[in-house]
Image (cartoon, rainbow, N blue to C red):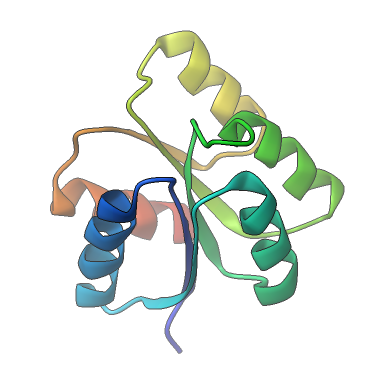
Length: 120
């Protein structure tokens, strides 16, 4: 059975890059969201195995979304993907429940490895 993935990023370009890389690696993309509100609704509805989560979204921070997902008892693994690579932000993301944290720019190989490691 393919792992189901929800992609969350405000950039259509980034969503497409992530979708193409993960679909090419055999994962099933079940949805894509451009805002935090949509991401939360889709996570609750779809219950994906994994969510790729940008940290800077138009309506909220990925770190805040992690808190909501925990409150809603969503058990999806989370790979944070952000241009923000400060150690304190990465540590906070992991502390709030992200399994992996990937800093942009990244290679397709880094993305696929982060997703595979998160799903182990």
